[in-house]
Image (tube, rainbow, N blue to C red):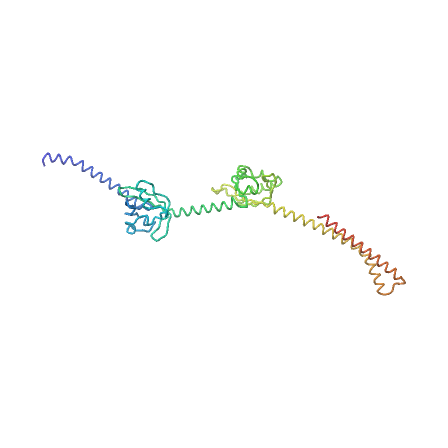
Length: 354
């Protein structure tokens, strides 16, 4: 080999090495991309400038059920449920010009069912090649809907229910008070937070309720007898409470107290008790009147019956008829007076109780 050719060969060696080096980098990059492409849990669809599919990864097959032959040359709007008011051609053109195309949308699987997908895209990952990434969030969205429904039920039961729901610490200080506090007690919920519940209980009831509350450490749930609780107007309402120890639950971290206002029921029960006692006493006095007056009635009634028997027998023992009739009239008048007094006393008993 001539010296000139050898020098030319030596000059080309670094160039060849550089080409091989860059080729190895390219292959490594392709292998890395392929590894990510094939092993990611998200569906990846590669598209050309017209939005037609050129390749899909394994996750696309698993999530959507399509094979590459099903989608090759098919425009992505065939399975992406683009809102009717949006023109896909306009959306895609804007995407190619750099506008972001992502968000939640419905995606039709091969079997016709729909999933909710988080759609993200990147234009021109290579010239004329665009990448769409789909994350199946169907289960996540369903759980979110369930959570929202649960929160609505919670609000309906706790915030807008007839019972007063509160969370207290182990010392009886309010940590949370439901919105129903105001219509029940006339107290804004936030005003009670941080205050001690026992400061609002009637002094005569406080010791008994406190003693029962202290047992919450031994018993998961306690039920109180009716007790008096001061409302926002300085008056006492009758309350019953079921308290459940949920201090070990991180979501609660306290004692849940479910209280119900039974003031109306207590007042009605007391009114009924008073009424029953009044009627009992009234009946007792009426019985006493009946027993006492029965002896007064017997004397004129006995004389009257005796005179009637004499007249019926015809043996008046020489008593003139006028005398006998006068005695009958006198006994009848006496009996009438006794009956009048009985009625008067009974009326007085009834009027005194009204």
